[in-house]
Image 1 (tube, rainbow, N blue to C red):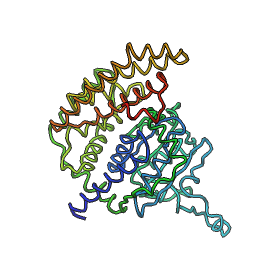
Image 2 (cartoon, rainbow, N blue to C red):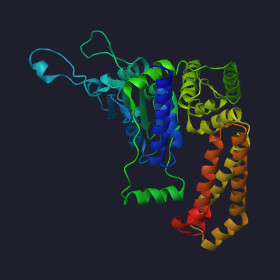
Image 3 (cartoon, rainbow, N blue to C red):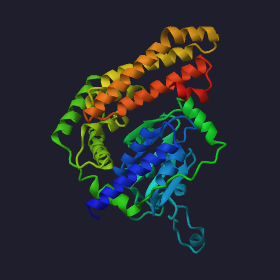
Image 4 (tube, one colour):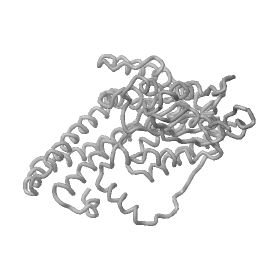
Length: 399
């Protein structure tokens, strides 16, 4: 497979990312990060409450790889290893042979989705760790370990690990992505409409398994990592250590593959500063640490990010005030909007628009600014619908 084929694979993966993002509201960054993680041959965790489309999103994404064996499971404290890696062949057992059936199980999967990953049973823990770490499975009957063709696993959970056993698995999930319920009332209204409408069949781009495997093993590792990026990573590590946020050397080393995968996905021959933004999903252990990591990463990526993140803090404060005013009269809410919320949100929106223009004209990434702009629009839509009583169908014209 040549360079042209590798470029075609990256182009197809970008199309897949765009198509899946269009289907799932407010999930563009999540989808792209999952694609980058798979390209890097790493595992990801999607962390969020039930009903946030975690499993559906994983199925839609992994279903685009033609020829790949896909396996998924919902774990519980009672899940035995044979259910994951291969049940006993009862017919063979009747003949006095002890044999496992591996087809359709984790042992033969190229892509896996493991739901409720931290409910892994004690009995299955060691085999699950070996599967994720080394892509091997030790058969129940003993003998040589089986090499598994796993490219990467997408895992999901409603909660963080609570014990040492599950913490061992958590440590092996390089990428951690938080998801929540839809924040923008307009997106929620579109979600409700989609339940009763019959949308046209969406475009469905796919790639072949061999093309993905070549990208993971050959094309992505070939991406150049310039000295300026190495220096930036060292600077970021020092900044986080000053805030007592320490990641292992292994995690930093594996993160380089994510940077290369991000560059490959964007069709560039070398890692650029914009690729560093993927590290916001790598360098935290608890969700409380994520905003600090995001701020340090984005300030390094782009000089516009600090002001954008300051605006994000002000927007979040307004949303917290709106939540605190729940149950108050419409008159009180209207007064709050007139005296405080409207002007602050409008000013933030105009400044974000200006920051985006400046970043785009300088050739810098606008991803961070776009995320803050999305929050500004979502909070403003909430103010209009919840504080002023404007119908969701009329809000779009006022944004």
